[in-house]
Image 1 (cartoon, rainbow, N blue to C red):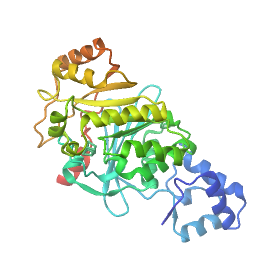
Image 2 (tube, protein in one colour; image 1 turned 45 degrees about the vertical axis):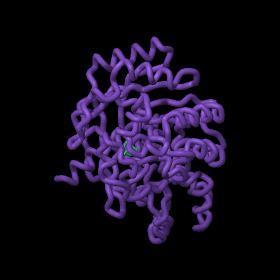
Image 3 (spheres, helix red, strand yellow; image 1 turned 45 degrees about the horizontal axis):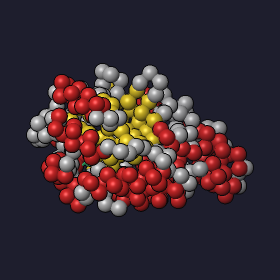
Image 4 (cartoon, protein in one colour; image 1 turned 135 degrees about the vertical axis):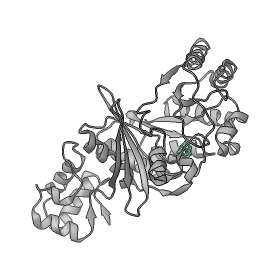
Length: 348
Ligand code: SF4
């Protein structure tokens, strides 16, 4: 199978030339695939191309999309969660989160995940495999098709650890930027952090993208090493202080501030002493904290922190000079936590 999705204008022009067509046919394919107004899942639908050319592409195994829609859940607030099937019968999730001016696509980078974070439904099932660039990009097409709006922002916060699929991650960001015309600055890569990989991410980004303008978001979720290890078992390989040092280096290398994701878990990390500890850890470099309400899942003992604790925590960080915002959970009523829809569908 050869995917047209993820191919640049130049590559598509070369494909057209190879089949004896004029180069502009390649540009037509490019426009067809990446213009969100086209409901483009199938080469046969690109009816601007001569039928004979379409037939040749199909006979030679070319495809636009190789994922298929398994299930969709629309929450009351308009958040759309999709369960998609891969050609090898695995399932992945992606989410479209609407607001007045933008649609944020939350994408998966792997089928399952090896990191085993204790609060996460995806982590319970382990890793099946990493996604190809075309499978990552296909999620954007599905969201645009289903929501009938152009995706404006991308967050890699779905299933999987993006830094364990770094080449396909960066190639998909290249296409998101050049083909989907979404600025790198509107892309966020979220990681639980893996030793040596933060440095590798910036280095590879300069090689593949020519710069590194996306936002790096670290799933920190704790203010000290001990607590972090109870929430994220893989954290035992990477001391929290070393993560912060590597993030400071990332800021020096790229000029981009780093975000820290902090899931507020009742009785675990939501006290003022944690807010003070976190402030001490983060003080003195370009960063920002996102406090997140937890979407509870079955079989996990963690509970969502109260709104009162969340506000107190936020105020304490602000008073300590740390930039902070509160991220509300979206689509809470419909299997909104990462991996939950996939898990519930399987259990059924
Ligand atoms: S939170 Fe992210 S990194 Fe952790 S297990 Fe879930 S998908 Fe993997």
